[in-house]
Length: 351
Image: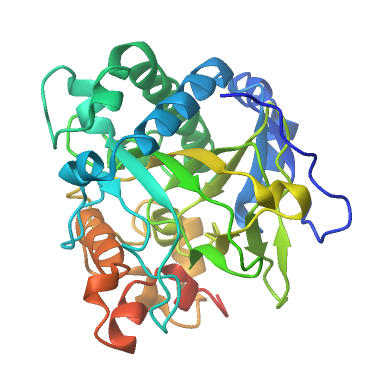
């Protein structure tokens, strides 16, 4: 896909993110590690440069475009369904973006990490021909590199939280099925420039590794009521923490509300593609604050206004399934389903 796009406008509200250098993180640079910790404990979002995945990202954008271009009937053979499965194709209008039941405008294909790592054996489900054709050459290298990046960053948080070495890594063990996913997303231009393409949400899992070429991503900064764009920077990924890391850390780490709207300015008149890798805990992992493993986390939970929110009593699979299922349009039977699709955004105030 061509990387030539209209420039991001300079007259819209943007939120500056810390730029973290992945090479410095890998080298154990203490100053850079402190900056990552600051990002993770404030907004939970940061830019990541020197991550080394640009070539694979370019290939994945092509996979997304080729998949979207398939006939609708062909794509629907691989639809996710309405019971909370995360993997497969999602058609435009299959999800809702608000409590009123407004349908979304995005298409995406979710490729299970379990399937990529087991290829050519089918671990979770089948995929369109455009995915299969690029699995070995593009998708598997992207998954492997993304896994390495996210695992390195998670290890930093492991140490900063005072956990025994490898605690968080064990919760994301490779030998067990998980909801970890590669997602290729397509959003067409929206005639109503104020409409939402992807609803306000926190991410379901642990760490998201996002690649954008156009604007559209917005964050709601804590303590404000104004949505602000996150400007895409060439060669920089955007990383953000998800619900699982909030719960594991007893609220020390943050999973912030974000959404996707039409890109601003001239960018809003062209097709928007994006790519994200989601690292999520192993399916059987029970989501709970790791108070027994870390005095720092134990203290945070003790002083939280509602400690019970850090022990939801469900597995990572149950958490993911609930959230995915209750965003499906067909499952909207009133306000209850919409509220049941929520994550830690409903519980993080006052921590």
